[in-house]
Structure formats: C-alpha cells, structure tokens
Image (tube, rainbow over all chains, first blue to last red):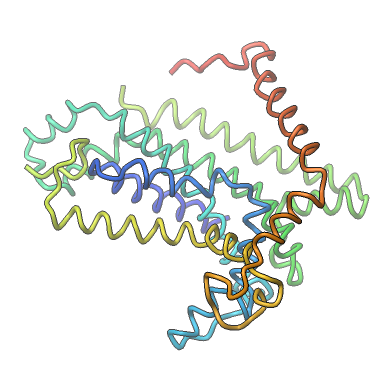
Length: 218
Length: 105
C-alpha cells in the first residue's frame, strides 16, 4: 500500500527522533507507541470497527462536535482504503520506531563531534548531515519490512471489510484466502500465492543488494 | 549547547515542553482504540449503541461481560494451546541448519 510505507517511515522516524532527543519519560513513550504492534490485530480490528461505526463510532462523533460531517469509513469506496491505511500505519508505527531507535543508538558520537567541528551547529544541520545518512541502513530495513507487512495485510480486511464495498479493499492475501479456501478455486489461489511469493522475494533481493552496497558507510 | 539529536537530555525548556506535548498527543492517538475497547468491555449492550459518548458506563456491566468472556469458552484449553505454540515455535529456527546464524555485514 502506497500510503502505509511512507507514512509509517516518516512518522516512525519523527517519533523516534523526538523520543531519543531527551531522557525524561523515554521508556513510557516507547512502550505506548509500540503497543499496537504487540496487540493482536484481529482483536484491535474489532475495536477499530467500533471506533469507525458511522453513527455511534467515536470518530464520527468527534468530527460532529467540530461541525464536520463524518463518513461511512468502511462502507464507502472512496474512504475504505485510506482508512485501512491509517490502521496499517497505526499498527506498524511502533515497529518502525523501535528499528529507528536502534539505528539512532548505533550512530557513533564521533560523527556528531566531527560535524560540530565542521560547523554543523543547528540541530537541522546535524540531522541532515549525520543522523539521516547514518540511518540509511535502518531506513532501508524499515522500508522492506513495512512494505512486506503492508502487502500481507489480511486481518483488517477480513474483519472489517471482507474486501468490500465492491472489490475496492481486496488485498493480495485476502484474495488468496477467499479464492483458495472459500471458493475452492485452488489453482487461482495458488497462483496468487506464487505472485505474493515473487513480490516477497523481489523485495528481499532489493534489500540484499541495496543494503549491502549503497547505504552502508563502513 | 543544546543538542536535540544527541543522547544526553539537555533540551531547552521550551523544546522539552514541545517534545512532551507532541509525544503525548501521538501517544493519546495511539491509545484511543485500546481505551475504546476497555470502555466497551464495561458497558451493557444498550449503551454501546447509543449516539452519545461517554467513556465510563452509566450502568456498570463489566462484571457480567468479563464473567462471560472467561467462562463461555474453554479458556484454559486455549491458553494451553497458546503455551504449546509458544514452546514449539522458538525451537523451530534453532533446529534449522543455520537458522539462527546472523548475517555477516
């Protein structure tokens, strides 16, 4: 999904940088933001369904208090994919954050000292010249893992939309499951599985090539 | 000197407050579905489908809900299944040749 990957990476990086920038309450923030990743997605999908309910859901009620018109988020072709994407970001955010935190910890202090001597005084300079380049491998890894997780979105589709309305929220793995096990079209289902496998392999190969050659500095 | 992107916690007060404000906001947004789930678990059926919102139920139905959750299914059996899966799955990679070997950089 095209929204989930950049959304997760940017938000995860942003939160990781914020958490790492000072010591106070660091553990609490880390734990809270990681919680969705630990939770069972099927169970959380039920909670999201209640939140997104068109009349009694919290989302539409909050929008109504601000005088905005809510939407029937999961039953409208225009909103169903963005809604699923937001849930995907919500779920993967913590994972990206943890990976970025690990990446931040691995940046040697000498790089910052060197940047200091070279005149990188503002935090933005340091971010641009040291932090982001040094996070290259972590970013690449997050990109691959989150893309794979976005492709294998299944629980939310199964619980919330069943691929509907129409076919607007059908995802690869959901189609596989439905064709193969519910409609018993085993050949079609197997073909979808092969396509899925190819995507996974290609992404992993990209990771192996790019990570090892392009994003390392040592 | 103020170094927001370095490890030591030496932020200017204004920066520190902004950091907390932003992180608390995102944390609250992240926690909304969990809070909502807990809230629903305490409500009687009639209050769940009411158009007005309140986090705490008017009639506390938590005892009934949780009793039902713990007794209507053979929960102990399910937990035992979970323990079995947990005990077996970490052993899997260990048994594969090279499964746990880390990649050389």
